[in-house]
Amino acid sequence: MSFKKLPFIIMLFYILFLPHFSFSKENVLKISTLEWPPYVISNQKDLGFFCVIVKSILKKIGYESQIEVMPWARALHLVENGSYDGIIPAYYSKERAHYLLYSDPIYYSKIVLFKRKKSNIKFNKLSDLKNYSIGVIRGGVTSEEFDNASYLKKEEAASDERNIVKLCKNRIDLLNGDLEVIKYISSNFYRECYDKIEPLETPLNVQSLSLALNKNVPNAEKIIKNFNIELKKYIEQNEINKIYNKFVPR
Image (cartoon, rainbow, N blue to C red; front, side, top):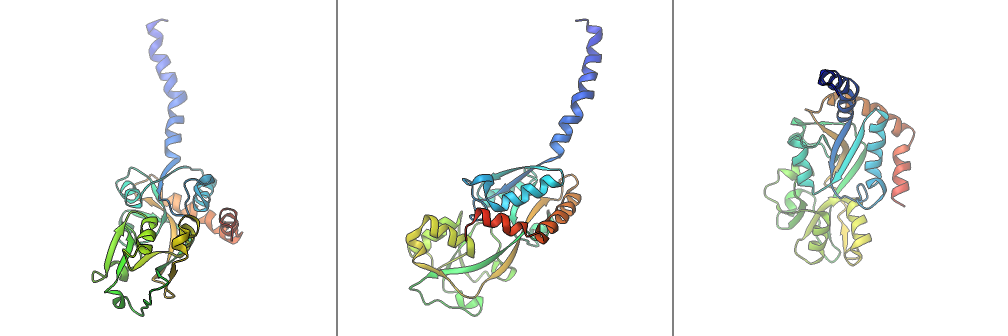
């Protein structure tokens, strides 16, 4: 091959292939999440119903997604420093809103306290709980009042599973968690614990669950805007509940 033709060949390669490579990177979103059944289940098809909803809506607006399951604190760190583009399922918080853009609510999480059935713990206000140890998830958000209540005895753990076991073994007095998550995990994997614990009637909060993107993601605002348009259609057509029922038998 003549070396005189080499610059032409190189230029032709860039013309034909470089736009393709750039387009692919711009239209694939790396999303972090946690093991959080029934919302996210790593050994279930397509990672569970919440991931299916997010992936399908993103695909409709022209984006593929790569979703990876990891501990929640790491998932938050990686999206905050820009290693990942987004995170699900994301509770809204003022602190995170400095670096995240949130979609409209995809689903809702009822956050409650679980106790042992033999316990007579009740509360009307948070200060009633100051003498009890409460298991929480490291990096988790409940409500502004609860999160700022420094007088509460909060014990952090990496997962809901660990807190369920700690509650059953009398190592904590209460467990803070999503009602559906704690019921699902304990009934499917810790049946002995499931029979020993119950939720308190008064919820701590009802949180919206969203897709959140790092604000530095190219076209982040446009992505969220288009995501919300498609999400609204899903809600109006009852697609959210249809997908939920496929993955979580009632």
